[in-house]
Amino acid sequence: MLHSDLPSRRYLTLSEADRVKLRTGLMRYLDQVLLKQSAAPTLQPIRNKYAQVLVLVFKHEYPGAWPQFFSELWSALGLAPGTTQNPTGVPLWLLVLQTIDQEVVARDVPRSTAELAHNAAIVSITCSEISVANSIPSPNIERQHA
Image 1 (tube, rainbow, N blue to C red):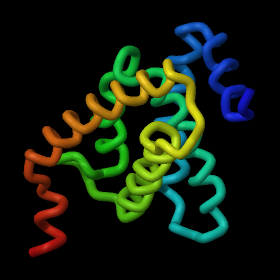
Image 2 (image 1 turned 180 degrees about the vertical axis):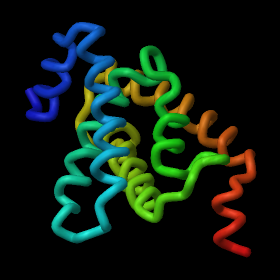
Image 3 (image 1 turned 45 degrees about the horizontal axis):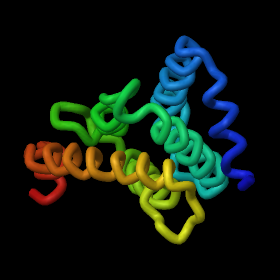
């Protein structure tokens, strides 16, 4: 058994209420801690671990129990239209995408057939959702280029 299987197996033992608390707590930590701190290099290991935990939860909950994952994350990071842009948001967004690539997309990681099928479904749905979001012009991006 791979060591990366251990958090996944333990996560599956949580009640639905505990899973909701974990999702809520992760988003609250993002808003109240990570986005309030400067991009100090000393905080990078914490950001890396946060992204890893967030993506592991995403992997289990998306799209079924957490279909609004991307919209919540974009809003929290200040990347959604109508939100206040946070300069720390873009690096964190890129870190989450990199972690999704490692935990879901990468094919060089040994995975079971069931996990490969689950990950392929996540990728398909995610690509559709990101494409829709990218088709909406963001005032935040337009202001940066103006």
